[in-house]
Every structure is written in structure tokens, then in C-alpha cells.
Amino acid sequence: MGILIGVSGSAGVGKDTVANHFVDKFGLLKISFADPLKRICRDVFDFSDKALWGPSEERSKPDSRYKRLGDDDLAREIDKEIFPNIDYGPKFLTPRYALQKIGTEFGRNCYPNIWVEYALRLARTALANPAQYDYNYKYGLVPADRKKNPIQGVVFADCRFKNELDLIKENGGILIRIKRHEAGLSGEAGMHPSEKEQRGIPDSAFDYIIENYGTLKDLESSVLDLYDRF
Image 1: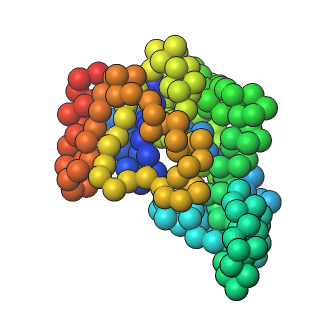
Image 2: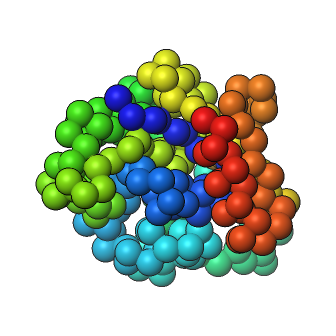
């Protein structure tokens, strides 16, 4: 079985950028736990590919087609009793809110390992047939002719929960945390369990730490140097 890598860190630290370097430089396959959630949201909510798979900030943009209830609605109602003229305005669904709720409140509450086991199942299939598969974020694992560039391993680009890290480690994987100043989400999104739990995991749980405090070129160099140490 080829190499397995799990990448973790707050939103916006550069997880996808690091994973893409492993793909481009070393022939790994990138699989994201969030891709099946994004495919659901694409089909059900008609979110654009840019909103789901584009830059991180795109997932925080409200979609005015969907007015939603929020976790702070009770507090809002109490405020209105005290301050009758207060006007919060409507609250609209963001792609990130939908992804968090489907991923955690639905998926993980049904079965905590649901997304990591799904991803590992794809990884095992790909690594058992390294010249026959590729991965497409829109469709999952797809047949491909990779005889000239067989898959060398799999990188999971969005590990957020300790049980995900533990299961990757149990399967012989390498765990990487990325740090960056001013990364992470604020407000309601930042307090969701998918963000809070990974912040509470100690550095000692990881095999390697990448400090992404410089340029994109610096980050690429860090990935290249790190791979030589595996």
C-alpha cells in the first residue's frame, strides 16, 4: 500500500495548497472528506462549483435564495423584547453552514467515522490498482489509464476531527498540521464542532508541523523538504 497523508489545520491555512503540491510533485491522489458533502449541496441547493470548491472565502458568502434559521434565533428574539426597534435583517444560508450541518449534525451524528471510512475505502481501491484510477472531486473515484504515472499514495486534504486522524494513523498514515497567522473562521462558523475540535488537538498528535508564515514559494519548499523526510 502506498503512502497515506492526513492534512489538518484551521480554515484558510493552506491545506489544499499543501495537498496539491503532494499531487503535482510526488504523484499522490488527493481525496477530500468534504467532496461527497459538496456534491450533495451542489445537487440540492444548486450552489456553484466556485462556491463549493473555490477559495475558502467563497463558502462564507450568503445565498439570498435561502433564508434560514440560525443557532442564535432565541437570543435575537430576546433582544427584540428589550430593544423593539432592533433590526438584524434576514439570515441567509451559506455553503459553509450547509456543509457543516450535513457533515456533522447529519453524517457524524449517524456514525462518527462515516466520512473518513468512506475516504479510506476509496484510497484502498485506488492504491490496490494504482494504474487504473484517478479522483475527480465532482464524481469521486473514476477509471483512468495511469500506467505512465501510477498513484504513489493518497493525501486527505481536510482532516478536522481526532477520530479521523486516529483512523488514518491506524492505517499507517502520516499526520501533518499546518499553521498560519490569522487563519480560521469567526462567528457562528468558527464555533462549529468541525472547527473547534481541530483547534483543541495538541501538536504532539501530529508527525509534522508546517508553519505557513511566508510566501507560496516558501510553502512549496516546506512541502518538498518534508517529503524527503518521510
